[in-house]
Length: 465
Image (cartoon, rainbow, N blue to C red; front, side, top):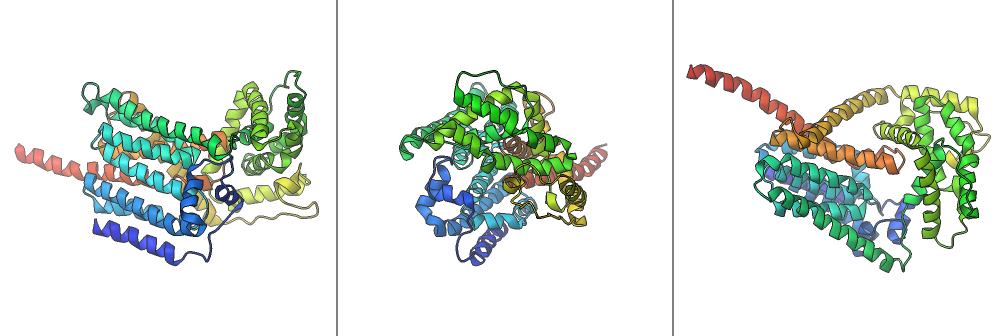
């Protein structure tokens, strides 16, 4: 325990000592600091309590405390200090996480709650009780008020209960389902009730923007005529105004398309959709987002296969390392830009003037890193599949392998939801990095346990004979 606590304490001290003079901010920081209606309430409330400067002090301390809690649970349940240290070290070795702790962004607080969730998973897969599941659900509900990604953890809680059903008696399994869903539902409902009060009756979200942007990127049958002139104008934007973007993306090689799709989907949430936003004639952000979201949803329903293809493209991008430095992508992107400029709305999407060229330089190291991440994606994907299959029948998983599988399912579930609702920026992969490290470390530990136990079992058997 002392080794784990010392490591976590040292990380907290390192973060505090290397803190910048002031918090790192991005355009998203404005929404959190000003509690605008498009962001969940959890992180803005945290900032109200801590302040921007206080946040970059509190965030690394909270994260380190959560890591210490995870390490403590690993040692309590597995008796392996090495496993605990491996999980903690594998998590904090990523330098970008340190930047999150120094930023006014929701990533750090979400990561802290994710680590707490993983610690409770470790405990639950050894000692399942409804009281413990209540704490799991509270953690997930709180995380959902910070980042909507945590909604992906709800089915993970159900899988946790199903994996443990053989160890439960009587009505314990139904009770665990209630313990998982009720606290989460209460927290989610409470936030929904509070939002109109906090925002003076005008709550909103980014969902409408995201849906409209995704609809603009997929080919779909033309919208039927509408008696509503606003809806007709939005359908015309989706059908015709964004057609050049879709045609350009369709002509690009697959790896280039993955890069450009991220930029254009982001642009369609902002400047590329200015004319569409004006067409809504809405008097508030909430009304505008609702109208655009409805038009986008209708288009997605007309082309579900196109939406799934776009989701798969983003999901692959989430597992892509430094896409602009990959040797093949950099070469293909340079060639495509040189041959096709000016691109549709390139000044808005790529922040380039018509006379500029954009050159990318590849790195062999990125190629090797991509191979490694691809292997990680495959292994954790298989583990996530094992959790899903075991939850409905065979095979039975040992507690250690169950932890590995549930952690992998947590990571992949969050990334699938991200790909469905947002663009494929690989920084979202860092948002579930502790779950990936936990999955890999526990899988290796489970295999090592089995390998080392086998010779001992053989010797015992021979001695008996």
